[in-house]
Image (cartoon, rainbow, N blue to C red; front, side, top):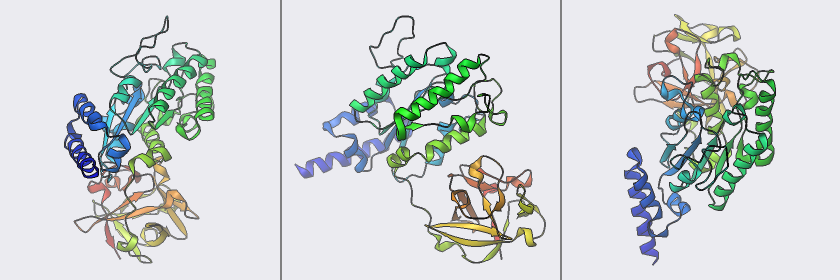
Length: 384
């Protein structure tokens, strides 16, 4: 029996892996229910972890351009090399409220019916390893009470708890609503979710909000409702670093530090043959034609497979991708940690603790740490 069970697991893992790039509902449903094998058994056997997203326009990608800049797609790209294959199924839809996400059979007079192709019941039909729920602001904007929204979330999460499926419930996002009382309700909605759901919640309201509870101008898409690429990036980071997400994906171990020249003083030459500069603690640029004091960095062993770059007693910071990188930190914290990655063409890339790579921006603007893949702009020659 044990051999037969292990063979079933292997065949199921093979079947799921083969359909990962072109997943269809029937394939997932057929495989996941075959032989009574549980999600955990499939996961432990190396089968893909299925991550389902339900929600409204922000998780659907509104406000991001191009589409790869949307937080779900950024997350997919950032975790593309995860040792356990990850399958993302995005069921979010523009304009939806929590009512469209309710379980099959739910009814409430005067409210939208569940969308059986995009609701919590549909999410469960994929036998997911994780469900993420994100309805940022439409309920409150449409005049629904906070109590009914929280009741809807309680019904959805109870459905997931009954199925023993992990989930992350997203808080609200700020919105430039003319009615200030509704802006306050959005803030309260996020606070309530955080208070009730604890580590199963994902609250980034304050990260996106002004003191007036509107969207920060630098993060605004321009329609008063959605965030731009930078806002999507911050949401992606909040998911990437979430302990439940991390526990599901079983991330890649850090790159060993042995390949980095610890203690060496180096200069970073970008794709345009110019050098990265500390720039006196201001935004860093990769536009210097020669390497002098501001262009020389000491490679520091930061522990746990990470390095830091030090110039004139200050450390380079990724700023978690929220702004241009700088070399102005007096000590090493999480934002000063980098993976030293050797590329096949003898260049190196530097991956921040936010999962993104330092980019020279080809010398056309301040250097950043927001790119989720390595192109020429994310490669540097080491000059000692």
